[in-house]
Amino acid sequence: MKCFGVALWLAAGLLSTSCGEDPATQPTSGLDTSDGAAEVGVDVDEPDAAAVPDGEPETHSPDATTADAQVDGPASLPGDAVGSDSSTSHEVLRLDELAEAFRVEHSLPGVGIIAFDRKKVLGLGVAGLRWAAGSSPIEDQDKFHLGSCTKAMTATLAAKLDETGELALDANLQELFPDVKVHVELQAVTVRQLLRHEGGLYSSLGSQAPDLWSSLWAAGDTDLLDTRRDFAETVLTTAPPHSPGAYSYSNTGYILVGAAIEQALGMTWESVIEAQLFQPFGMEGCGFGAPGDVTLVDQPWGHRQKNGQSQGVPPGPQADNPPALGPAGTVHCPLGSWAKFMMGHLGGGPPGFLSEASWSGLHSTEGAAGNYALGWLVTQGGALQHFGSNTMNLAGAWLYPGDGVGYAIVTNTGPASAFMGPMGDLVPLIAEALEP
Image 1: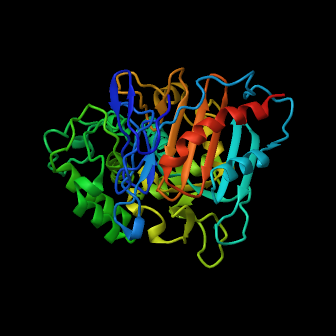
Image 2: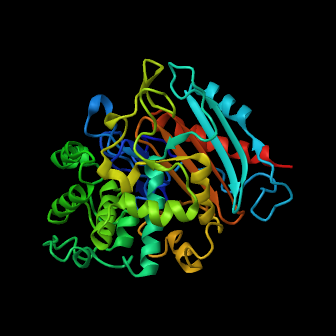
Image 3: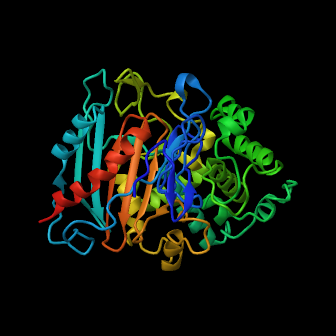
């Protein structure tokens, strides 16, 4: 079942919408387009709806968001998919021709494709340009903005902190913020519920709380601890716009999780995730915000479509959502480093990083209001999916734990609604290319 950027998805009789708040889009399947961007629905249930970010930073609009939607890739892979147990060859298959064909067909500036099993990269391909008006080609180690695909990282970090006893997944908001007079309707909401988009919080900051959204833009990156703390206090003392316990995709919920992590550890979410996730997984080159140097065009620039043409957005504050949105969708990574993280969700990753029960819990929708687990949309058959977009970039991930194989596709342009479907259709072609 496919659901595209600004579409709504009906699954199991549930209307699902994906809403988030960064210039990225994520649906139930993992899309964030809530603040400022059109709401994107994907494999989301409304209890699992896709997430839509907060709108695009168009003309410096404070409503830039990421949309994460679920666009179904195949429920099963063609032929005998190469899994993590297939170690006959460590040669990485080049997928550049496939990437170029996809880029040309959809008139994209640049494209990246990666396929992997539990332990290694199986295939890799890149095509196109970092900046549509320039001549610098996309390279294997280039860093792509992942938008709401960041959510799986925040959820995985929370699971790690749950194991170490630093942040309990079942702790409620009143326990996490004891010095705040939390609104009665929010007091019992837990970290787990926030990660499943069941907190009843804003689905679009730009439209539902424009002053609060603007305050994040005004704060910039000068003091993220205070910015997220102030944001949390405002949200926690206000009646929720949706019913807690029901699914409603929300970047706000992930920002609150980031604030809770900061409250517990006394460090920014960025510092914690670098030390406790990026480093253990060997995720070199990962960072936050729009990557690159505006004077060098050394990384892919995001692009907007205007009159059928891709217009580059140079790295800087307007090339992404506000930094405080980080836990919901501001990570960028080289494809290889992002794959290292996803290998963990296939059963690989650093030995002992999480218990088997914790990994399973991240992918479980037991007790959930929809088909959204912790940072992942769970599709029929148990596959994991997510999209992320800040409206100027788009990333999609499809993991098949049963087969031990995963795929990711990125492009340095938006809108998400135009390319999520085609990305989902590309997944089986990648799988076929990997067949012996």
